[in-house]
Image (cartoon, rainbow over all chains, first blue to last red; front, side, top):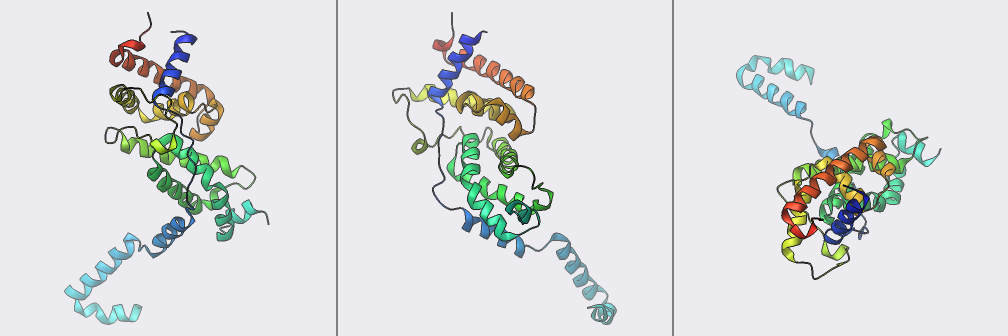
Amino acid sequence: MNETDDRELREYLKKEVPPTNAELQRDLWPAMLRRMEARERHVPWFDWVLLGAMAACVAFVPQMIPMLLYHL
Amino acid sequence: MELLERFAHGDKDAFETLFRQYQGEVFGWVMRIVRDRGAAEDLTVEAFWRMHRAHAQFDPTRSFGAWARRIATNLALDQLRKMRREVPLVVDVADVPRVNPAIQRETRERIAAAFRDLAPKLRVVATLSLIEDVPHREIAEALGISDAAVRVRLSRAMKFLREQLKEQVPGHERN
């Protein structure tokens, strides 16, 4: 394989898969804001686990309700 | 305080300024790799989201553009891994000049297949170097590898493509 072959392959590929010179056609800031807001509203998984644990306590050990209320 | 320092301290206005300043550049770079407008837009937003989250790790004495490009390149590489074997190489017809409209559909599909079969990390280098004429140094910076590693990947990609095209497009083979 020599430089001529490499150049030929390069030209051949360029012909088949032309370079793209795409420009951004719209402002992405609104999408960025939506992305950021969605993340801010996102509840971490461990919060759900904690909530589930509390619900289980209330359901199976109702005697813990006063203690839970005390800590809230 | 300078814009980059304010960004590094978590200033949202500074982030918006940088976003507006660099979104076109990041989009253009990602587009060169994934070659799909919709995916490139999504990846641009995702890349800036990661920059926003990692603002404290950014060194304001360094180039924001280079940092942004590095993050965007990693995301684009992940996208190529997801797209591999699922989606053919997409070339948005509206975005590229048709150099030779007479090229047969079958031949185009074969070239696309050869590219699709390239390992993503080789495909990124091949696309940027062979098709987009991006200098090795820029590719190396964006991928976080050395110039020598770029040359090695390019050489491996060319070897693979050469073999594929010889098999699939007999006219390509030199005597």
